[in-house]
Length: 215
Image 1: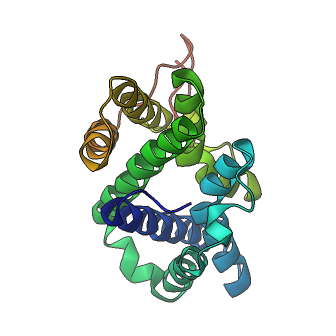
Image 2: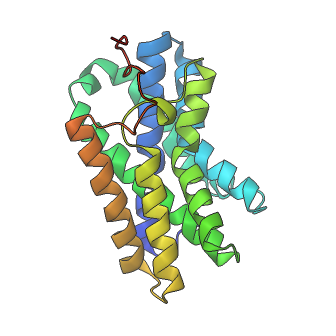
């Protein structure tokens, strides 16, 4: 189901493309996959979260398969990563910014869709978070590594907060683009703070950060 307004729908498509681009870049650098593997991994990353969301909400067939633009953008992101991976390496921060935009939009749209179908606030928060992080989790499982969402930077937490803000705003009677953008902005800001200062969610006492060894 498309987003409620042209603006949010455009952001949804943008998020799909950026997630696909990041997923494909991961394939290029981490596993050295061929053309088919890179594009496939990009598509799984870009479309995975929304597909899981629609399955959970019993909204079948998933929206990403009802509009050809989702599939085209996901495949296009994978192809661009395959062809221009070296140049894209130099755009690390802009890509992280766009990735944060995608995370924010997906979290809010996932929560809003759950609320529209009668789900409660907590359930909507969960659905929104899964929508935002689902594609990246599928990507990491496919290349046999611990999902990024479970081990580094602030990722799931911003998504959960963004989805929660959207659900609370809806419960207070605030609907539409402004409420959704406000919730997405909260998610985006927290995510970018995590990127900028390399922040992580707390880990068990005595355990090392990623790439480090315990004292």
